[in-house]
Image (cartoon, rainbow, N blue to C red; front, side, top):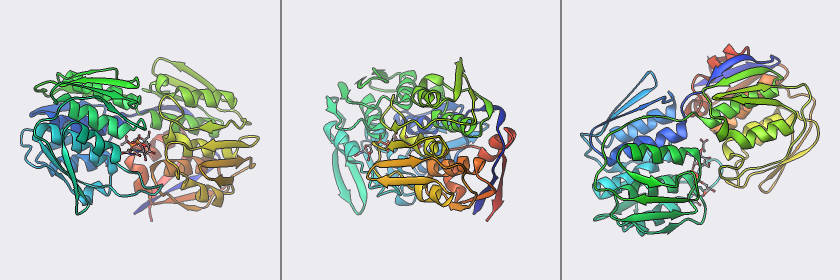
Length: 417
Ligand code: EPU
């Protein structure tokens, strides 16, 4: 296992290019199951999660290859219908095969993902939506076993605007008979990207990006070529890296409209942020102000940037409150940040963050993807060296983070543990 070693104290300068969005690519990969043939997705990040999803598809008889950010998926040999425990337990997004397999093959067997580091994370909304579309579902030996003799479109109302359940439903409904109206759908840009991909396959999905998505089922879809949207969470993490180091960086190939909530918070904190086309420029300042945050579904402040933002707030003047409303226990980064000298108290789903003059480098352990990013950010400004172990988490969502930060002037390297 490798670890990342960061020596703090450098102001970041220069330009960084953002890759394609992991959370858009994952459902797009499984949407390829809705047809037979070769689909091509470009701007695909070279990430561990993408490789895991490729393995999930390969177990189904699909042939996939990822070469220079171009992913080719050939579903001609689709023969299986099972996503096994060994893969689902390493990546929950494997559940994205449920809807497409049911729609395309009439059956699916998907391991239940189980809990994760920050809570139970149920999949009841996915299951209920498939049942509403006409599938019969049993839970058997830890697996969701689903069958359907032709899905039927109908209105589906979610109690929570779940990204995953919306994506699974859109995929399943695309080949259902009739129209499915998804009420209280997730509005995340990754859902819009998925809808655009399905439409480029000949599908009829309208309203993506709003809270009502209407899917008119079609008899068949065809393979397609698609370019993935920029990864808003990677972009947001580099924005915070610029802000926290008092640096001056240009974030290229990004989509500023997907990051409005973070940009507003940073500006309120006194950080200079300018957007021009696909470039976001950030000018950090020596003293920045504390600004409260409440995470919420898009277009609210993303839960996937909460940990990184909290690192920034540890050295912001004043006290602030960070409330996590999407996942109740998503605070695994807090004990590690405290070990670096941060003043953070947790009360339920709220973190009270006080000002400290500096963080100090320490050995810390990454517990999930975004927590790892928060610790790297902390390392960039800490006195001395920060050793972040279990970096396999970071490889799930940040391609070449040490090269990208290194090119901006950070002292960062990956070394064997
Ligand atoms: N929920 C349920 N039942 C369900 C599904 C979700 O109660 O059947 C709850 C969850 O427990 C949570 C809320 O609904 O409290 C929202 O969860 P959602 O389903 O929207 O999350 P997800 O689809 O599992 C995706 C991203 C996450 C991101 C969330 C929220 C992917 C592969 N994952 O997860 O990304 O945090 O949406 O935006 O798209 C990450 O990239 O680091 C990451 C964790």
